[in-house]
Image (cartoon, rainbow, N blue to C red; front, side, top):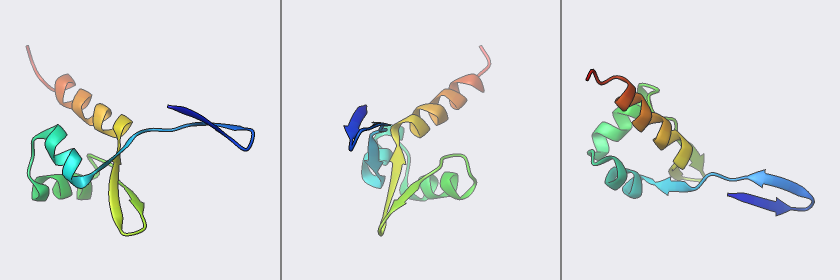
Length: 70
């Protein structure tokens, strides 16, 4: 999503909460935190909230698809 603010064009990713991310990936909370700790999914801290960029979730899902042998 592109947003213009004070003359700057910002390319903004949608941010998902932990709960939303769990639903999107269909995994447990401990599994998500393990993936984050292992560096497989990057998170963003906004105050005390942990959020996940849409592009990061897409990248992670694609990496799962790339690892499959057909």
